[in-house]
Structure formats: structure tokens, C-alpha cells
Image (cartoon, rainbow over all chains, first blue to last red; front, side, top):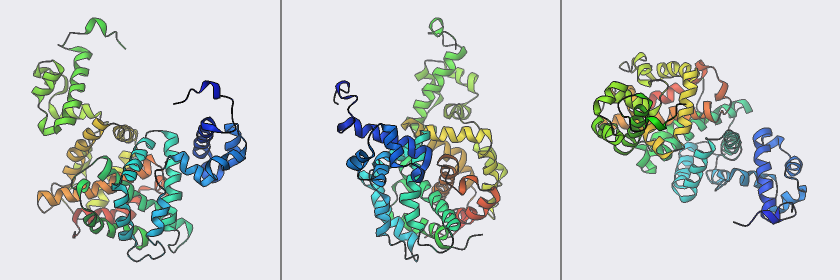
Length: 200
Length: 200
């Protein structure tokens, strides 16, 4: 902790600038969405030059990840699942995600999920984070139009969010202490229907 | 708000007694579970006579519901779903629960769910509440042994909790504003597999 007093008013560098940008980014992303929130508007809200955002965060996408306080970027794991190969996609997805959620970074992500659910701006950020960094990379290769992919994405979210909640937050047995292979065998068929099955 | 000062020490009736019993009940139910927490122990923790618990709440089960601050008892809705008839059970369950969650009492329940997830004792109470008043009444008529019913109950919880979270808390579209009939058509087949389908 540094004394904030003497540094107030300095907007060129240092911790204050970073914090001001993050606070402005959270408000803007929550209110306007990722696409609607411009770097220029966030910079104006924070009272800094837009170049400072690139200097501190390297762009809008890394700023978004920092604003959400994401301990990792789900999109990076989704890529290794090979979402373009739809056969067996649900099983690969669960088998890849379970070890991540069971790790310390996963515990931090579950903590973020719990605290995000508690605050309204947190929910707006969380929703965009889940959509952009987890769901879109999973469903973007599926056939059908955008509306069908959005529908499948929300169904996938309903099962995966429920699994996270049941296993890691509410800790309901036997799911809470079940080996990964058993969870994959039980849940992948349902998840695969949401991804690629015929829907009514 | 009444001034608490002059009433402290009175343990016979009135608001203090009720509040003391509720606080003790939350601690005991969270620590020892519903079955382990006795009325006698809760009364001792609250510093009241056990008869006061029956006087104020009418027994351990109503005390539990009051401690959880449940706006309604899910068990009462599950009964009207006729869980003993397994054919079409998932569709009846969703068609019954969606109008409840969409009602003001349902909004209160979703609020309780969000705030419960935020506190550790809240999670312990929530887990027991979900198990005892929602899941057990749903699965108690299913064939198989207790372990299989507990497994199916936790799978059902993973889908229903995820639906509540996606629709009411994170408000992910299109699930957030989808008509009930469409949700039933999309999700009931998956939920029915968890209830009665062959599992690996």
C-alpha cells in the first residue's frame, strides 16, 4: 500500500493511472458492452490519454481481461480442445476444463464467479466474459446461423455453469468429489446434444 | 426497529428470542447438518428453553425453512409434479418450476441463491435446503439404490442450477427471455436422461 495523497492528480503513469483506467473500464464494459465501450471513452472517463491504455494494458482485449480480473483466459484452453472437430467435442471440452477448474487458477476463477454474481456490474462483466472468451470460441465452428449458435451456446452455458456451481460452489455429492473421467462419461452426452444434436 | 437495549436478557418471547433462535439455528444447521442439529442444541446455543422453538416456529423443519429464509418450499411444488410417475417427469418438473421462478417469490428465491453463494455458512445451508426440499422429493421414487438416486439428484442439480443461473442471474440470451414451452422442449430431454436414462 502506497499513500495515495501525494500521487493524486498524476495521470501519466504509476498505480493510480492503472486503477483509474480499470475502474472506468469496468463501468464502461458493464454499461456499453465490449463492442460498445471504446478505448477513447474509457480513457476520457479515467481522465487519461488513450495512449496510456495501450501503454498499461496493450489494447482493449487485455484491458477487458484485466477489468474482469480473469485468472486465465478460457479462450486459450478452448483452442486446445479443437472446437472445429465437432465429433466428441463435449467430452474433450469437459476433459480439458476439469483439470483447469481443479487447479489453483480454477479456484480463483470460481471465486471470481461467486463474487461476480453478487454485484450487478459484476454480472454484466461476467456475462460478456463468458460469451466472448468461453462460449463464442466453442460454438463459432458449429453449422447453422448466428441465432442457432447463440441458442446452443446458452444451453452449453446452462450445463457447464451448473456443473461448476454444483461441484465447486455448493459442493453437492457425489459430483463434488467425482473423478474427471466419471463426470465426462455422465455429462458429455448431454453437453454434446446441446452442441450438435437436433433441437426442437 | 425497536430499541434492543431494555429487552436484552429477556428470553421468554418477543423479537429477540426469535432472532437468537434463528442465528443459533443457522450456525448449527451449517455445522452439523439438518439431521445432526438438534432442537435441544439450538435452544442451548440460543439460551432459550427448547419449548420456545416449538412455540415460535412449530418444529425443526419450519425452523430450518425460516433459517434459510426460503420464500417458498420447493417440496410443495415437487409434489404437484407427481414425481412417482417417471414418464415425462423432467418436462413436468420444468413446466411447473419455470412459472414459480418467474414469479415474485421466485425472484426472492433467486436473490437468496445469489447471496447464499457468497457466504460459506450460506452455502452449507443452501446445499442442505436444495438436497432436502428440492432434490430428495424429486428422486425418492426413482428405482435403484440410495447411491444411484444421490448421483441422479446431483446431475439434475447441475442442470437445474445452471438453468437458474443462466436465465435469472447471468441473464444470457436467448435463454434469459425464452418462453417456458421452448425451454421445456430444449432441456427436458437432457434432464430426463439424468432422472431415468441408463448411466455409464
